[in-house]
Image (cartoon, rainbow, N blue to C red; front, side, top):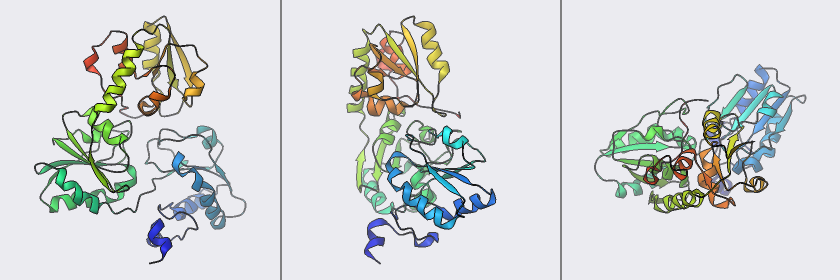
Length: 344
């Protein structure tokens, strides 16, 4: 095997030989077929933040495979999930391709390319067995590893485990899938959950929403096994709530991204608090909020804005439930992780 194949992954079985990063299957043949079938002349391509740099090379490959009169446009809008569609570009194209996430908003115009990983999960699963207790385990993963989910279930069952899985709700595409804002697939009859995937945010959120479960993280990308520990995260959230308890002026953020708006929650806060002000934004960043003279903010949009970026904001940034704690409507020990459930 060539050095290129070993270092960047192998796409020989996809039928496409790409000139660029080969870790993912961009499903170019399917995109070309859709473009031809719909006689499309304008095609939009949207990539998540970590993959935007690969967009021009994918566009080059598609140009070579399509007629010369087809125009490909790259979305420069921030994208952190399938709930984060570039609706401006989508309205101005015949075909809109969203890379990196599974379907959430179905549309005849949108082609979802989930970018399944070809990383072998089984070596790290073998290591993770040392952290499992008993023979019942729930299994969850992200969209990038769903192509191996059934294989992982079979692998665990062959080793004597009773594997519990479910599809959470309408916001989720696959059985066993978790999102950064939805862990309903982990609502299973097992005291421990094995999360297979990169990063710690998903398993930390899972452990927060299901504190009664032991969450084992098997990360096949970084080749490490850990246990989800929410203590540091919880201290951070409690600290933010405490800082906001003396706040007088509140900025209530309504996110205008198509899959992140919770206007009924925002309106309820405004209705009950005369010192709360509704702020509509598409992209919520610390720099933008510095222009508002507020004592604290409530984020009704994506929970990850609060949990991932919370420490970067100049004033406390709370979830809706944390806000209710800060103003005295709920006790401090009731703090929960903020999630999205259901469809749009």
